[in-house]
Amino acid sequence: MTRLFLTTGIGIVFALFAGCQTVYNAYDSMFGSRPAQKPAELVPLQPTAALKILWQGSVGGSGRGVYFPAVAGNVVYAGGVSGQVTGFDAGSGRVVVQFDAGQRVSGGVGSGSGLVLLGASKGEVLAFDRAGKPLWKSQLSGEILAPPEAQDGTVVVRSGDGRIFGLDVATGKRKWIYQRSTPTLSVRMPAGLLVRRGAVFGGFPGGRLVALALATGNVGWEGVVALPRGTTELERVADITSVPVMDERQVCAVAFQGRVACFDLTNGAPLWARDVSSIAGLAMDARYVYVTDDKNAVLALDKTNGSSFWRQDKLAGRSVSAPLVLGRYVAVGDLEGYVHLLSREDGSFAARIATDGSAISAPPVALDLTSFLVQTRNGGVFAISVQ
Image (cartoon, rainbow, N blue to C red):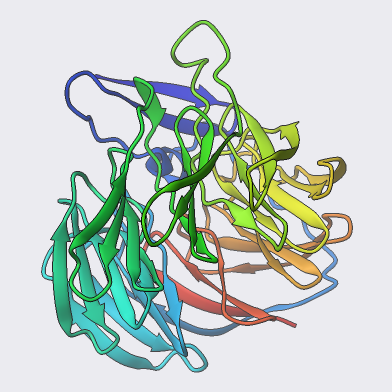
């Protein structure tokens, strides 16, 4: 059984588990053709920067899912629901490799340790070398909604039933598994994992953030980002639906119908928390934590204490993506394929550029200090520079 819950500006699909999992996709509601709120009209702006499309390619549409591209060395790997993967030269966009996974895939492309990694809708992890040669397959317990990642001899991936798996990078054999109880009602989202410094950071339904040892899966610490509140099951949903972010000192996560919270990286001690509801995600730089909230506003918060610096709320109803920080600017995409560049200092619009008119579902991905990548729902891959 499923239920549909509409917040202002964003429609969220929940899955209610009663013996078996019912599959629905919140991103389809966020970035589909019928947003819950009429998208705000884009007002003319006085640009203080310029955006330029360096190159573009096509990899096929994403259907009802969201697909993340990956950057491995000087190659950008991207694919759509059909399982066809294309590698583009990151500088020129020239196609350098193409291969077929042989089945429908979900979540997009992951990478690391010399591998190109895919998750299949039937729950398999598929590993290829960078030339597209198949290396191994590993069957997991549920559909894979976010790309696998590899580092230091271990491939980590989350299945749709909430389990996190550690797989051997050479063979795909299971090294460890982490699982925890989940609420009856939760948001079905492609929440990926953050893999850094020999640790895996992952958010869960119920507002919990967990740090695991990459090599063994042992729990280092667990933090509370948000606690369920309210009397109904819908009101008590407080799920972490996006990838955490970190710097040298702290790791931060945000929950839908919850908070932004930051924790000490080494021991999980809470540093600060701020009431913000987000399903899209967040980013961090040396000064701020940036969050796209569930009203499609982009916020800049002081990363030392959570105090607010600015709020850009002129993109209401436009299903705004998670932010990407590029030096003095913050980039976000929207449901009509526009990329908006905001000033880091005050959130004002610095530039805007159109892509192919379809939704930019996944967060933008950095190529270098001044350029980044977006993949659209129709399968367009665009490398864009800030000038």
